[in-house]
Image (cartoon, rainbow, N blue to C red):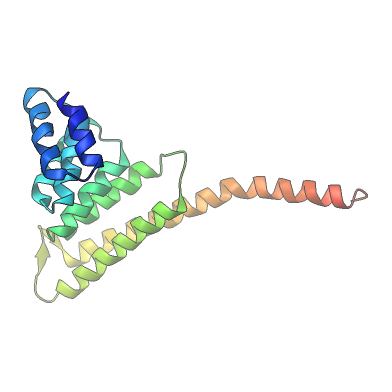
Length: 180
């Protein structure tokens, strides 16, 4: 009952009230849906540390779902944990590329977030020698690698689609010019 009420309140943007009902669910039993919804509520209310904690639990329950890493990366960015954001974006990309329905729009979002994280780190590099025990050069190398992975996914997606397009073009050519 509390989970359904929490979902209803979340869908109507009553995040604080939804959290009360979702708290009842997670205090009674482990329910990944309740943790996921509560984490989203915390994000909407800009309680990012709490959102990260709940996404940690959701990821522990289902570590193969790329979207959880992405949502946690959003909160890590909000608390200026750029290394954590980059790591989560890496995991997001890693599990996303196993997805059968790759959307270019999502890849562009991941790429933009990685570039933005790199820009933030670039601005801070003169003030801080390391970010969460990672050197600036290590982080830049990771960013470069993750951006390269996105390009590989795009190329792979295009290679899969290209033969189909070529067949269609050939069929069109033979239909238009039967003597060919």
